[in-house]
Image (cartoon, rainbow, N blue to C red):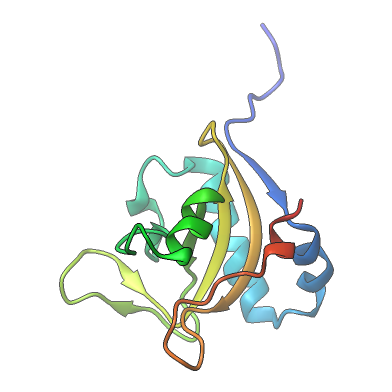
Length: 137
């Protein structure tokens, strides 16, 4: 019998994320840490384990859109981190927030690459996308 604990879920980090993380405000660092703690324990099999909404970033985007191609092609997902606070959806069981954590879900669905934390929307009310250089890990 082995004493080794099997690693169920793996977390990697984008190069730009690692550079910027030390400069993030403490509340953002804490929100990221909480998401990662839950992911390490449960993965993405049961979204109810997360307080905020977890979603593929191409969901509800027109398939002919460059946004769809970029997000789907890079398997980009996002998580609502609860900053500045969580808001309960009027229609669904999940909660949303103004800030989201971007991550890539790798093929085996057991590994994520943390990319960036941003506002959900830019100043033009477009979904905020990480720049391509943030996808390098």
